Length: 385
Ligand code: PLP
Image (tube, rainbow, N blue to C red; front, top):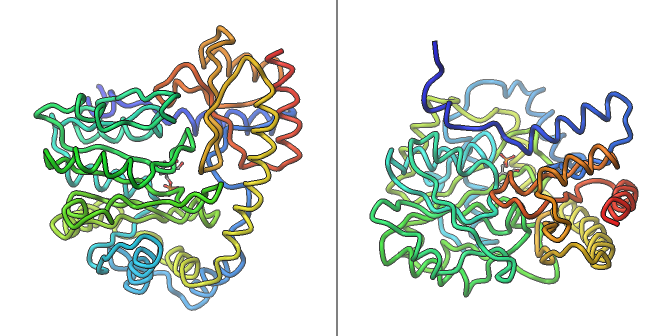
């Protein structure tokens, strides 16, 4: 017997696998500094947990509407209006089990077998696999260090074929931390509009931005762009809620119903009491987010200062997220060898760029304490020297 050709084509998430490996080694007593983590090291803020616990006490434990509870969908609309200048009605919002689930919902609801989806590399590990699950072809477009790892309108145009259905834009980007400016997004949108290419805009890191930069939502450029764009966001990174599994998509009306319908057959609904927590996250005080961002800022500044002094590596200063993406090509090693040797020799775990479609770099996550960052970077410097 054989598993389906669909799953034969996909690989497991390398980032999750590495994180588990590092955690397993640490559990065995090894002094591992884990720079692989894709999740905040902070606890979920108290008022969010209290809202979820209160809803459990009130027996809010049954199925909810498939696309999410009305008050959360409304709160998401208010957030999108206030923060992103986007007008959506609750029926356009589909609350899902994480932004990851929101992405695959959108892809499955819009992309047909044989279609092509343009994915700029380095990319978040799951995009190509999701496209393959839909039976479509990921078309990987390598970007350059010099352009801050962002796809240009020209590259987008050149990658296009009659089969192109969608482009995926992730800003701020995992793994590079790059942010597309409004002008850069205008360039991308211009090309998409010419050929009616859909845009999946993954904005999960929108609140983790630095240097007084602001995040811009591509769907807010014009009514025409809005009609082509699916905006994905969630609670994991902003509110330290990775285990809660809550995200959402905001879709043009022409697709919203089908996305909810697809989800209704896959998960029925996102977890009832987790939705109450998410509601508290959006309705409650936001100083918890500011405090986390302040801490990330300090860590980012420290890492950049240390890394800048190492001759054999280079990096584009990350504008957002909690990652630094480091080019290690001058060490003469590819990313997997580098990551493996670093783990074996110095007990420092990083994610090799090959997981993101680029074998010349590694990703360091600073979603870990300053103390561990210092220890890890001391070892990192020793390893390179
Ligand atoms: N999109 C990007 C770019 C991510 O890095 C991640 C998580 O690592 C997700 C989506 C998924 O987030 P969630 O926990 O909401 O599913």
